[in-house]
Image (tube, rainbow over all chains, first blue to last red; front, side, top):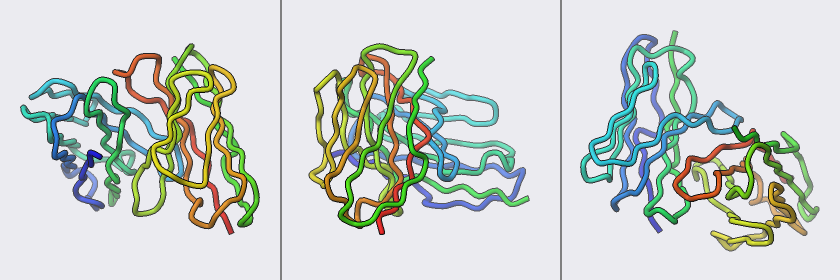
Length: 111
Length: 113
């Protein structure tokens, strides 16, 4: 089955710094989803990308999907303590497929 | 928008005991429903999904089963829990139609001792 590789597994960043999380698939994706999870809680939807080269932003978070639809990056600008948590990418291989997830990136923000 | 109710929030069960986790959805009809498990070092693993009442697909062989007795009710069960069943269980739904994002419940932390 298709796998999603996320990197890095964990990240410690000084407050105010920028950071990037990556999500890579060996196969072309139909849709790519980014979620955020606070420890011990459910997942909160951030963004969905479907078109090659697509880029979306929400507040200080920007997500991009490459032209080949196999790699996505999540970029946070001027990080804040509220950005701390686990970021997970999920993807469908085709329209009728289920969403599978990567193992997540644990983000810690140092004050 | 849809709301997912999942309970209990935490559960501690002895090995060999039965399990029943319930998930109910509000705000949508005929949703696709999912059970995921999140275990340390293994990420978010899809266990079961359902596209309608009585229709259950299992993604991985395991000690668990799922049922959907009503359109917006999804139940995860086990007759005898194993230590390896410990983890964080998440119920999710998407509105009917596959090209939709998932909405997640708040999860159940299950510890099997």
